Each structure stands twice: as structure tokens, then as C-alpha cells.
Amino acid sequence: MKYSLFFLLILVIIWVPSFKPKDQWTPLLDKKLSNWEIYLSFRHARDYKGDAPKDESGSLIKPIGYNTNEKNVFSVIEEKGEPVLRISGEIYGSVFTKQEYENYHLKLKVKWGDKKYEPRTEKLRDSGILYHSVGESGVDYWRAWKLSQEFQIMEGHIGDYWNIANSAIDIRAFLSEGDMNSVASTTQSFLPFGTGVPGRGFCLRSENYEKPNNEWNTLELICFQDKSLHIVNGHVVMVLQHSRYMENGKAVPLTKGKIQLQSEAAEVLFKDIQIRKIQAIPTEYATLFQ
Image 1 (cartoon, helix red, strand yellow):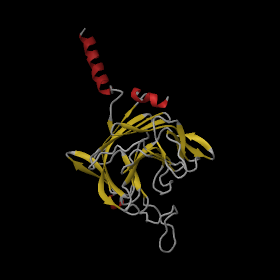
Image 2 (image 1 turned 30 degrees about the horizontal axis):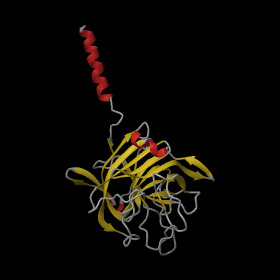
Image 3 (image 1 turned 60 degrees about the horizontal axis):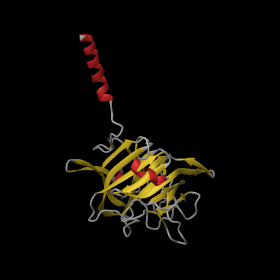
Image 4 (image 1 turned 135 degrees about the vertical axis):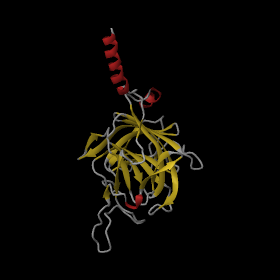
């Protein structure tokens, strides 16, 4: 009997620490940015038109590249004992996760800093969460990011969608007309956006739910299979599905990848960055895809 109890105790000691609830959150931010890598490209000028930057002699300028944190663009400061990621925005680029993620719920808090740089000194502050990020950095228009889908973070526009490089996706949105932009709506049918759909690489969020007085905003990104949701301070502002990228005229599923946080000419702060695995779209949102 003593031996049976002894072996049972050993099993409990071994098993209990390894047990993790399915909904357990994993923090992604610490003081050393140990879950992230860095890419920096260029200081873009106001007249940038997408061409590779050149020096005064006409020679191509090389991007700063990977894991060289010039000008300390990315730093971790402390606020009330908590780590806060500060992105100065001075040079275009991103921090991106070392790990790829698939079927997950990402949650973080964000607010703006004071500084802006060219080419956005007279424009709205800008950043973003780029998800399902694959391949090398610098393949987009600004030569700064990986192929991905964008959850836009911009003053008054948190939750907008942009396609990055040759990505594409379908969004529940109003059909645009002329020079108007499409606007997301949970009541509308899915429309294609991104590569392969001329004039439709961008979609406005359904409504502005950014908090006033530069308070912290809670953003949630839910991704399951080819579907995703952009959620701002508890409000669904965009419903997306059929995530893909286009290659030689063919659609390739884009359902997993790394997560990038953009440096885009504006100072921005992130904290409480955490992620958890999910087994399905949460029940309260499932009908949005029916």
C-alpha cells in the first residue's frame, strides 16, 4: 500500500506542472525583447515614391537590416513596474516574433507617443500589427516589412485593413464606388481585397472606437484557419476570411506566420502583449462567418 501511494505521489508531481489549461495566455513582452527580432530599412523622405533609396552619387543605399537596433528605435521601458515596448518610429521597420503562430488569440494594449518623423510629420500617427508574416523583410512598398495581413493602428483608424506585399483577403464590407474607400460592416457580404483586386488594397474599419485623451487601447486579433477578426476595445470592427497571397496568378493560403509590430514614422507604445492557442472561432463570434 505504501509503495502504491508513493508511485501515485510521483505521478502527481510529474503531471501537474505539465498541465496547462487550453486558454492559458502566454506573455510575449519582457525587458530583453527575448521573443522578438528586429528589422530596420530606411529613413524615408517625404517625396518617396517606392523606388529603392539612393545616395547623392546615385548608388543604391542598403537597408540597415536585421537585428541592428540603430538609434534605439525599439526599447523596453518600465511603467508602474510593467515592461512597455517603445517604438520611436524614426526608421521604418518592425519587431517580429521569433516564432510562427497559427490559430490564436492575440491581445495587447497600445497608445501614442509624442514624436513624428518624415514622411508623416504632417499626417496621422501610424503603426500596425502585421499577422501571418512570412518570408524576408523589405518586400512591401516601403521596403520595411514581410508579406502579411495588416491590422492597422492609426489615429482614428485603428482596425483598418491593408494588404502587405502580395497578400489578399475577403472582408465583410460595403462595395465602394469611384474614389470612395470600402467600409467594413458585419451586415455586408464578403468582398475581395488586396493583390489581384485593382483599387481595393485597403478597407476602413466599421467605426472609430479609439479611446480619447490618448488612453491605452485594448486590441484583439483572433485568427483561426483562414479567418480573422479585428477587435478594438471590445468592438468587432472587421470580419475577414480566405486569407491568401498571390503567386504567379494563383492563390496560396496564408494562415500562419510571425507577428510584426511596425515602426512607421510615429512614436508608439505597446504593453500587455499576450497570446493563446484557440481550437475554434469563439462562440460569440462564430455567426459573423455564416
